[in-house]
Image (cartoon, rainbow, N blue to C red; front, side, top):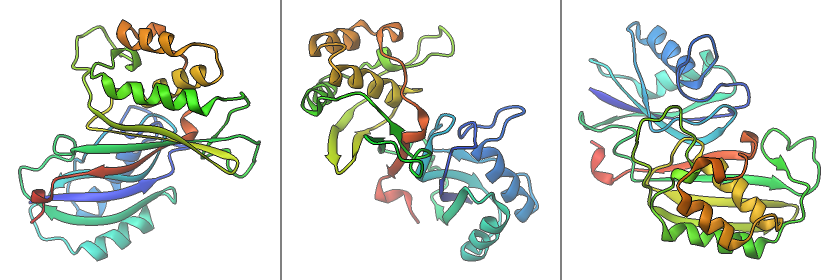
Amino acid sequence: MRFFIELSYNGKNFFGWQIQKKVNTIEKNVEYCLSTLLKKKINIIGAGRTDKGVHAKQMFAHFDYDNEIKSNFLVKRLNIFLPKSIKIINIFNVKNNVHARFNAIKRIYKYYIICDKNPFNQDFSWNCFYRLNIKKMNIASKILLLYKDFSSFCKKENKIKTNNNCKIYRSFWIKKNNYLCFTIEANRFLRSMVRSIIGTIIDVGRNKITINDFIKIIESKNFNYCSPLVPSCGLFLTKILYPKNIFL
């Protein structure tokens, strides 16, 4: 039987989602605790791979297990054994052919910027000291919806050619009180894509580059031309959407 696990986490002290040698990751902790409680080696497949230091208000993963599971009991037990920075929200059955990553139809990320230094928000936002033009930043954000190849914002691990096409549905900034929030919704995201896009849009907002420069960067399809990535502390994976027919 296939199960979905819904969770949230504070990514500050983790090297991202994916299991890696000799470092602490979200996937590593969840797999270990699930395997211990179910008394069987469990492999989980996440809906995505958040980078080091990135947070998730909603993440999904799937795993297979032969027997029935008392979901409420297992959720409570997992939350006892897992680090305080990881919370299991729910565990439920899905159809056997459903994949947490490939069946997701939309993902939403939010990025938070504080305009004034605040020691209590430093782990969950970026203190940006630049004077920013939000109007220009929103113009740049809307331009993203006109493109599908985002190679310019994809941090590549190697030179193997990959599919860098994404469909962006929404991309915008809002300002409220002393913080800015960037929201972006797409069918999929590339490695470090969101932080790369934000860093480049920030340079538009601080008048370091023009809107035309921004367009040229997108059309170059070259990661070397984009601006530096913004810090991971302000980035949250906030929602993942699936078709209704995946559920039993």
